[in-house]
Amino acid sequence: MTRLLGRSVVAALLLAATLAVAPVHAGTPLHADPRGGVPNPADPANPDNPLAGRTWGVYKGAAEPTWPAYQQATGDTKAQLKRLALTPKAKFFGKWIPNRQITRKVTDYIASATKKDPDALVQLTLFRMQPWEAEACTRVPTRAESISYKRFVSRFAAAIGDTHAAVVVQPDGPLARCDDVYSRLVEYAVRALEAQPNTTTYIEMGSADWFGGDPADAVATLLEDGVAESRGFALDTSHFDSTPAQIRFGSAIVDGLAAAGVPDAHFVIDTSDNGKPFTGTWWKQHGDGHPLGWAPECRSTDDDHCVTLGIPPTNDVADGAWGLSDDVAALAAEHVDGYLWIGRPWLFPQGGSWVLDRALHEVATSPYDPLTQGATTP
Image (cartoon, rainbow, N blue to C red; front, top):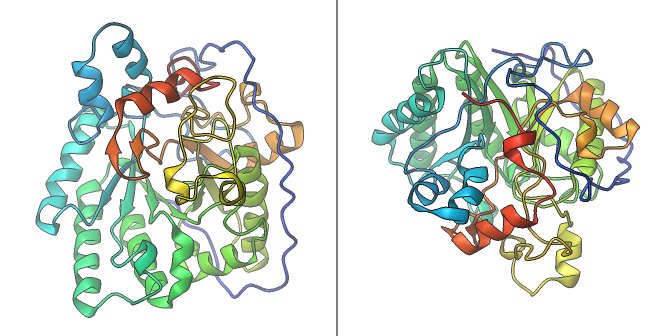
């Protein structure tokens, strides 16, 4: 269980993050796993990283669409889908799961992902807020909805128990700015989860391009959300902005939280879908008129500004294979606990249905290979 010390109001104006982006190594040959088959230790710049030094569990079951697709495939298709199915992912748990079923769903997921290894790390995403998305700013949760949310969260947390878990709390987190009732519910979730002995929470807070690179609103929202009780925050779950941009932006948020009395925050970045990054602003100007979640996948390695797999899940965040500039790599080593696959770019539209053709294109066009470059798995 990790906790940050102190909490206060944002003290001063924050400097906007500089979002200079270094190119990925799209043309670089794939590297062998630098761990040599053992879990990667913590970086000296981030020695208490709770995601380091453990195998990262992979769920193998029907609730994750990449797994049955992989099982049923043959030949080259199976070889390609292996790169998705055997990669650690942070599965979503949300309102589509009835409260009465959440305990069993979580315990089944953990059993599959850990394979009875008590030291394995499991990744989960809590996405239970109702209302949310487009409805979040039109009304607030009813009393019954708030009670139901807390009941779900309490059972979710209890089911995790003493499992080593990293939990991303409520993607599209900036929507909590619609009303402070959302922040109170997020804080409830953080407290319930952090009460478990080996659970680490990261409050999702959008993306650098969501805030236009200015961390002030993100800092203020995180403070209201109870970030002082958590390890920190998560970025880029529903956007496709670049990893270097998130590292700079997240580091600016860390500085802002420290200035507000919450020192030593850390963050994770969703890299499941930003192998050829683009911003929400670019999509509004050049897209097909649909929402950002309808962005197409890359269909050729020459394509850009499209959806494909990004850096594989790992806590080795400053590795030279990721093509980061020296200054960005140094920021990552100090502040970033890991690159996680939180998003599910093989679904279309975002959060929709499994699309085999989309998944295969994302594997084929990615600059990275999760099976040779990612985390060690049990």
